[in-house]
Length: 398
Image (cartoon, rainbow, N blue to C red; front, side):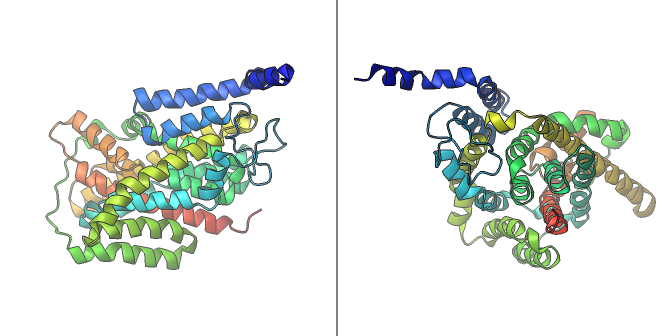
């Protein structure tokens, strides 16, 4: 028996970690994501597999890595233990490079979403448009920090609070930045209850936050609910063709829900299918978090720009809510609570709950949940359209 070879094999993992302490740091980051998922319940369905994937990706010589130099654009030069087609690389190639996983997840999101509150109050669709301001503000800011225009656009999409859209756009415009963009998007989505309230309080008065809004008695017919996803898909495909893959899958999932004739398919999309793909997506993202590429100043810059995008999106939505407040007050002579603008992001239903809870802290009799849900669902559509617009504008940019 070759004892020297056996000893070398047994100590390869330890020596590999000792030679690259950055791997240990990345494993600690993976552990932090797991901690946040388990103890704080911050987006556990994604942070847990991402954290585990991060730990596994930074172990030395396991054969699970995503270090296939020819197919993974951000890994260069070759690492010491480039492992070819490991598990994470297979998942990445199967569902990230071709945007399959984000699109399937959008089917599930659509099946889970009730657009009824939005259809009852169509004017809330304006909140979904205003809530995308941070995307374009961050795009301009990121270019000042040295990111090229395509990278800046991919970073700005973080502000939409839409993980699948962030992955989809980053894979198209800036594949080298996909790992930190994906981690930042899902991390900040989980921190919506922490990020949004201070911004809302800064831009509104206590009296405004206490404004009650009456519920409408308008009933949405079944025909309207069925036609809505079809019409949105057609209109979007005509106006913003590059947004078609995302919006069509979102609306297809919603059509499964609202048709009321394919309950098994709707249930599968909401549960089994989404859960399986979420596991694969989380592991694939975590598997990209290799120390050699993740521990860079540019990565820190992406996380900083990501939080800026979130704040600007929330601020843009609330400021537009102030415009709506003035219009309703002086023109329509009706009440409008401006904090609904904060729901224009795509973090559904977290943002709606945050706004509702904030209103109730000011006045426990104030129930804004249904209005907030309407604005929040409009944010889902708005984020997809914003992603499509960005890709259309930069399709030919170098």
